[in-house]
Amino acid sequence: MKVANHHVIGIEYTLKDGKGEVLDSNEGSEPLLYIQGLGQIVDGLEKALDGKSLGDNLEVKVSAEDGYGVFDDELIQKVPRSEFKDMEPLEEGMEIVVEDEDGEDQVMSITDISPDEVTLDGNHPLAGQELNFKVRIASVRAATQDEIEHGHAHGEGGHHH
Image 1 (cartoon, rainbow, N blue to C red):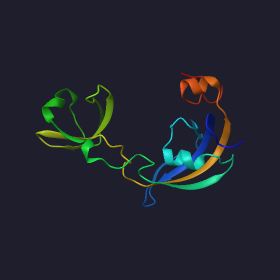
Image 2: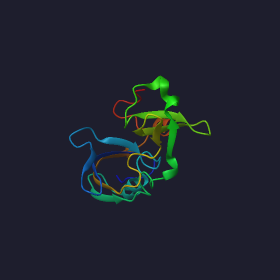
Image 3: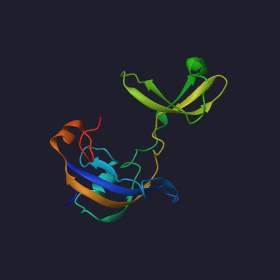
């Protein structure tokens, strides 16, 4: 069976940055399950897997544009430290959820803390980076109507949430 839209795909993968450093891997664990065509994995990887078959091994380079996006300086904000008085202790690397001007929740990382202000970054931690995937297609099956409606794979034994 081939990878196609509305199929549940199980992949074993290792993700490396442009320097060859391993960023993430599920090697030795259960395959990552996703539904092809629903945007559940980065676009460049999803496109590369389309039409491939069970058991295929691939090495895929994904550009920043087709991965987590290009780094956007406009997503960096400096906020008065007084805005965080209820969140002490603050630490660099901490993630917080803020409401944007449209009322939507946005995850931001604290990248700098000074006595007067806190610098927040709304870019994904991997924004601006080329991603290098080593992937094996471990399973392919048609998604059920429930999975498509719920927007995620249910795995062995059905719905578990």
